[in-house]
Image (tube, rainbow, N blue to C red):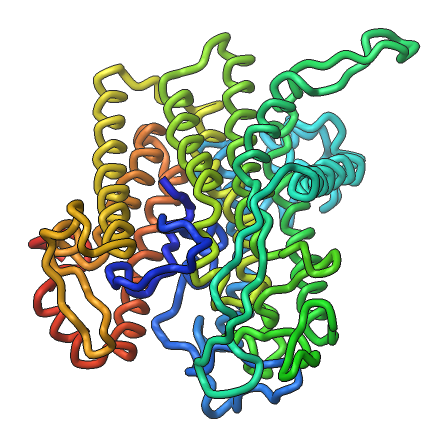
Length: 544
């Protein structure tokens, strides 16, 4: 993210290049959670248009010259449709402990199977509404009134989002400038001197959220509601409505994506700046300015959509707050539900909460690092990032914890110790590689990295050719994947569902590395081929 959970989507095409970041930004790598869906999320190998931005007043890139990703508008449309279905199936199957295709048939065509009917207590004439309610929430009390449960879930998700917005607004913060923005007008790829200012207080919001959930949940002590007390939030409610919460979050993500797309066509004198200080319309992301509505809606048309007088940045906020912290809260809910059912917490459940909790904490602790990532500097904020931030991250990253509630393999302590060793190995590689890269970027002559060799490019930059980065060009990806694999291993080997993360992430990283190679070859030309001859391996030294 991010350990930096977001570095998994590390948005630096050249992680080993030495170029000083903006003075206000962190030197740590950062990967945006949203990157899990779509580009990093499934980033294509084709490069973007050469211009990094365009103003709303300018015409879209010609369809004949625009370089599409994801198979173009058709691929974007299919991805847009398939991602919600994948989440709903995964959240349902993980609660059942495996893949059951018959559940889909029962849902779509009925009548329910005997076991299904006995749970729902309905005849073969059960309506689709009842079947869908059961599919989303088998533990809910009344499947005849699914709208009641849906409205409760919708209220919870909306309240959670608003709560995180309030924390972002009222908590003490550090005002940090981001990377230079691309110009509205002028030469292709030019940067301006203008920078956006961001409110950095995610780490404080993280701890305030945990504190309130643990001891600050309000309740009445008597029927007259005269005495208000505070205690632990009833998080197990989230576990029972896991898939239903995912469904309403998907709906919210679609609404927000639609609002942001419509907003990108509206001139805003507060947020926009053209030549001579005159408004030129919203600054558009080149990759989301094709002129095709479906594709631009998916990729994100506006680069940095803002509200509240230009002080609230939708993209930076959603990258970390609601979804990433929500992922940890869902994990805590699963832990509490397991303890309620078994009377104790298993080693696997404890470790998955520790591993992933540390992952989330590190992301918020290094919040400033996100400001120099591709998510913030280059990608538009549309369905791809919105869906990834709000829905994909919390509801696919928490699959292991949900699986362990009902299907814990009760691993022996030697097995748990071995998994801890796997996780530590991944962390050592991931943090060691990123730490070395960041130290080299800050000061290549420091004692910490002065012994490292490098290739000086015609651009005047340096590419590391020894240390961690001399082993493989994407060695940090390897460490990141190993950590993710350790999460899945805590679930044993009885089902493939909790291994979705490791399988999907491996495909994502291979796809992304191909795209990065393509971008770097365009950027460095012959120097990149020379670098690849010095560091021939991509992920694992001597193998691949």
